[in-house]
Amino acid sequence: MVKYRIRVYQDTDYQTVRDMYVAGVQQHFPRACRHVLKQPWIQASLVLSFCLLLVLSGSLLLSLTAMLILLSVGRWLIRHLWSSIIDQNLMQDLLDIRSSYMERPGCCFWVAESDGVVVGTVAAAPSNTSPMDVELKRMNVCQEYRGQGIAKALCLTVLGFAQRSGFAGIVLGTSVIQTEARSLYHKMGYRLVGTVLMPHFLAKFTNYTFHKYQYHIPVGPQALPEQALPDRALPEWALPERALPERALPERALPEQAHPDWAHPE
Image (cartoon, rainbow, N blue to C red; front, side):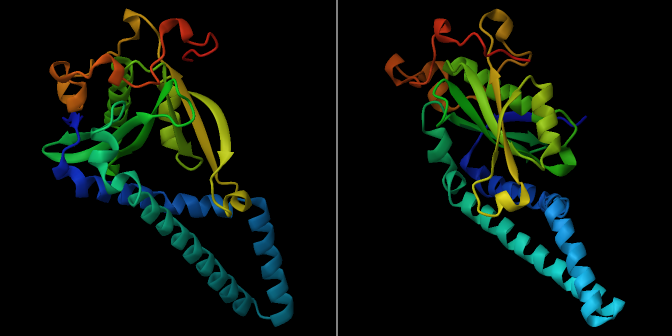
């Protein structure tokens, strides 16, 4: 097991965090291609195209060559779409991480560091769709450091932050091809609450879905995570000596009596 620590984001982490995001998304590109090829209508279209080419050309070699060209063009289109998604996200919250996460109540960004190198990231921000919850975002661990418990520790960091900030639960979303992430969230007690198509016109043709998860934070002493959230893992505005006045706490905080009865960890 590697040694690591979790701390809040610093401005010197900026380029490393962005580079990690790009590398993490690019690692999923082969899975995205396989997911597309698994779609029944894609497979049927490829078989039909091959048969049609074989009948028209009468040449097996020519038909196979044409199919390879067709698959290469399809791969290039997926790669172009993948790159556009990366560029779009880099121009959103990751463009100014400090103002997006470190200077807003109810938000924070953390990094996992091993031997002075950033090897993981996670962020939290109030949910836009569920006022009682905080959203877990930008979960990412370098490929060579996976399986070391870093992702679980990052999840617990968000849990501790949500408890201290007065949120009732945590929500997150992950894509259909991120099987390891979905398995981790299930093990951490998150429950699947919905599956929707990704907001892109090609999503409905490739059945590229987005899975939404929710974790309800239990109330009481037993709710504290095994790994307490140290002050070094809190943003400046959340430190005890710099605590905000009560009116500045997130409006999404929910009193105990308002917790819905149906929301409970699995």
